[in-house]
Image (cartoon, rainbow, N blue to C red; front, side):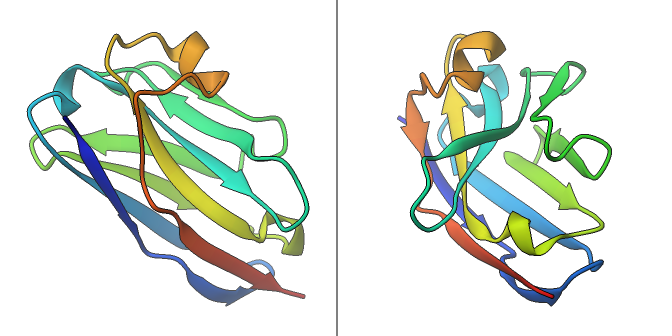
Length: 125
């Protein structure tokens, strides 16, 4: 079983940068595809970014392409989300998630094995 704990959220201004971290416990992290999702108030949770277990294959949602970067450090059991050029519409609770079988296509569709508790990101204009 894997447990995920996100950190790094906060209140920033438009144009600022922020890096989220997701620390995982358990032995399965290194073999899992990992991803980030977000949910804004009154909206459905949406896909942000995923990477395969090596970190070499990465996919992004259209709204964050070119601004956000997902990466991972398997030695530290941690996945990151570097967010640049933040916009007010990026305001949401950001969730880390993982899928044990490394199928990033299914992970994109939120077919996950485990979720983190979420971290709030607020971008002011």
